[in-house]
Image (cartoon, rainbow, N blue to C red; front, side):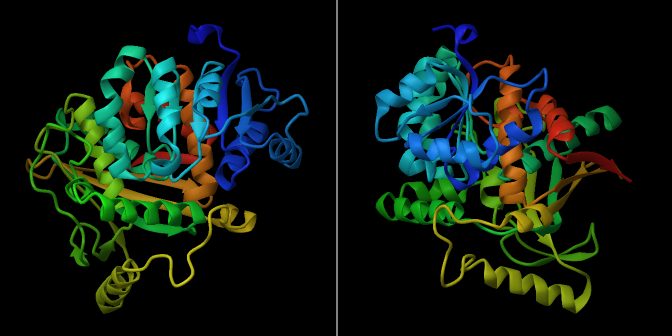
Length: 394
């Protein structure tokens, strides 16, 4: 069936889960009866739970509800044939995502998720990139805090570098200046699933450890990995390892790869979290590094758990990107700032707006990233509808 004739613009699959519910809330809260409101539906395994969540979030009684189950491929295919875009929060994706990606590719349906599981992502790239190109399906991984602020932050910095210097930055640093947020059970479950997958299949180790794990056939220069605390000369502060760097850096390099290397084939990029100057900053950076050995503590949250509404609304993040062309003193800086808890309050808005941007996307199909498919179009949507800013700094 042609996408133009499908019943819905967007289906939120997993709408009864913690994050899926937040995505549905964004459509209710932000679009409501607006003229540009999409035709959207909520999907999940249980009709009763869908009805309950629909009523609890204040969605109209007429909001369509679709029953679909990750263990029932026919139900997923039927769901995909009804919509232009599927937004899925049903993870870990390596456990529950295979059949949905396959159904989207087969039906030419656009797809976006919150995946931060690079081993599974590489498997889907190898399995489906060419067939998605043929069907026109745009499979857009990592459409939340991992990795949109970083993927698009580098994208916008490089655009600005081209405009200012006539060339891209060959070296970019991503530095998290501040962040307030918490982990959910879904994040903990994804990490656990990844570790189990590595134990069963050691061939995943090179993919997980390489910044170029998502660029099959291309291996760029050695990268600064940011795995140990260091003093950052460009900010005058100590920097600690950043837990999400391993997935974000891979997505940044995949965007560069899929767009034909606008950042250059010798592009270098890393991410770290800033603390403060002096001995206090050094001690804080070392403490962060120690914490990352067991990020969830003795009692990790269970799937379905996450920050409270107050925690989500009080959360925020502030990321600085520093780019250098390698010539003279050519340097450019860009800040990405977002309101709300980064992993959930902001992530839910990012995923929803990725879906909206995909509706207008003209890029060819394939397995890609928000940066490779959407670029500046998504930046504009996030600034207008998700309270995220991308701004050049002096």
